[in-house]
Length: 241
Length: 153
Image (cartoon, rainbow over all chains, first blue to last red; front, side, top):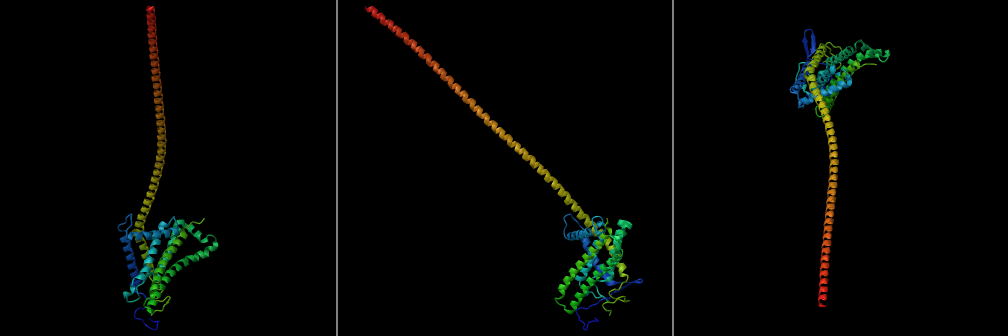
């Protein structure tokens, strides 16, 4: 650690270091993909196990999956509306599940045990590339949802209820992905940093409540991201009269 | 060692954008399709089938309850009718038995009267007979007394 006067052997802070993989002319952050593949694999394994033998009286993992499905449906239905929520439910649900397993995976799995030549494993959502990718997908989705549902009448939204709103609505199109990505990125990175710093300074007891707080924050952030994404889509498909 | 907030650096940093971004976007889109096929569609089908099943079962149960209630009222009506009929039958039977009793009483009375009348008539007859006999005997005795008296003289 460069910026601290002493080095503790138990934990080490590495911020802004990445494990680079070279693909052609492009470079990607290897640690992000390694953790995301592992977590996506775990998520898919859970889904495959839970849907293998589904019955009318749900048992075991099927219960959990149905609870998640119901939760996501309620989320999508309340934000997007009865008419088109079915089209967007998989996207909203995937955002929620991916962010949720990424956040919790980053907080619960002891990635530190795995040594990398550079950088360290952690929540994929603690990397700005991931959160910006998700936020841009949300932007594309609400534009697509608005245009496919209302055609060019979608742009009425920009002058609704008065044309004075036009500049604000245009600015909103930029602030929406910005706030979405930075909120998620900041929360998850801050949580990881707080835990890492606390473990670094006081390796016993004290980090535990902060870790629980981190789990809470992680779940809340996944919910906030999915809810806002659904809300933006709902706003785009809403009919003005 | 990169510092904590390294903007726009060529190597590393917190805000190090590169091909991770589009690849991650593609990955999430792929995940959306995979989860749609493996999770949202099948689970949705099962949940909605169950909701349909519960709704139809509930509707059927309601229909059956209505049927049962209708049957109950019908049966109650029938029971009331039957009770009324039974009361009528009891009343009729009581009247019948009273009539029979009265008839029997009247018959017995008339029979008793008739036999008393007969007895009276017979008594009268026998008394008349006895009287006649007594009279004739008295006449004979009188004649005899007269004869004897006349013979002595």
